[in-house]
Amino acid sequence: MTLLRARGVVRSYGLTPALRGVTMEVAEGEIVAVTGPSGCGKSTLLHCLAGILRPDAGEVHYGEHRIDTWSEAARSRLRRTEFGVLFQFGQIVPELTAAENVALPLLLAGTGRREARTAALTWLDRLGVADLADKRPGEMSGGQQQRCAVARALITEPRVLFADEPTGALDTLTGEQVLGQLIRVARDQRTTVLLVTHEPRIAAYADREIALRDGQLDQTGLGLGEPLTGRLR
Image (cartoon, rainbow, N blue to C red; front, side):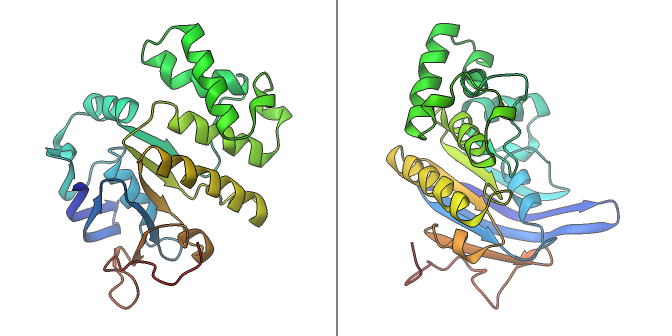
C-alpha cells in the first residue's frame, strides 16, 4: 500500500528553485533512500513530505489524506503522533539527560512522567546506551548522542520515520553502527523510513533508492526508484 506520495511538488527559496515538480511514492514498511549531490533538493523534499514545509505547488499525500493543505497546527500534530523526524546533528536538548530527551515526545503527548521514563529506558537499552540514561549530551560522544536521538524519534512508534543525513556528523564506523541499529528497529516494528543521504554506503541499507539532481528525479541513475539489487547491505 502506498503510504507517502508526492505529485508534482515544487518548492523555491526566493528566486532559487529547490524542487522542480517531483513525483514519487513510498510504500508502507519500505525503507527508501533519497540521494543526490549537495543542494539537489533532498532535504527540501523530505521536509515537504514530513509537513515541515508546504510546497509552492503540487500535492503531498499521507495515506488517504492530502496534508499540504492542512494548517501548521494540524501538520505539527501529525509529526507528534504519526511521524518521527531525525536530523543530522540529533538536536537533543543539552539541558536534559538522555532519558529526559528520549521521554520528551511522550511527555508532550500527555503520558505520565513515570511511564514515559520507563519507556525511555527501554528504548535507550534497545539502542545500546542504557548506561547513559542520566548523562547530559555534553557527557556523551557524537555517536551516543545520535543513538539517543534515534530512540527519541522512535519512542512513539511512528508510522513513518524521516531521517535527514542521520550519520552525516559521525565517523564512518560509528555512522554505520548507528544506522544499522536504526534500520533493525525500524524493520522490527514495520516503520516506513525515508532516508536522505549523499553517501552510497548509507543508501545501500535501503530497499530502494530515489536519486535527485537539480530538484528533479535523476532519470540517468536510480531516479525512478529502482531496487538496490545486488548492493551491499
